[in-house]
Image (cartoon, rainbow, N blue to C red):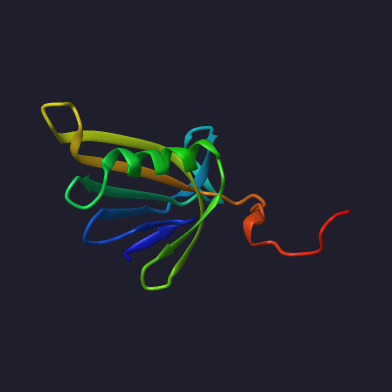
Length: 139
């Protein structure tokens, strides 16, 4: 496994094609009379992760894999992003999913698709995982 986003695992041999991480910083620019502006550091911007995936019919059903990503993105649920080496990157939301069909069958079935997923760091409260909760039955 190369990385995991929530319950979605990205396998190196079947899917993964690249990862770009962006960390940026926020500055305010203050104008000054007869002088150059001065910058004031405001803090870090939210981290972004761009994942490039290849879905090929030899290894998976591309339509199903794309649907999995879109279904998770539609819930707007913050997800833990963990690299395959165990490094915890943080909590992210899926901000954007782009796809480019590289090859299709004569019937229109997807054979090979390049998918770009943009993640944006989430700093709000993370909802608890309801499926793992255990407790007493309510009467």
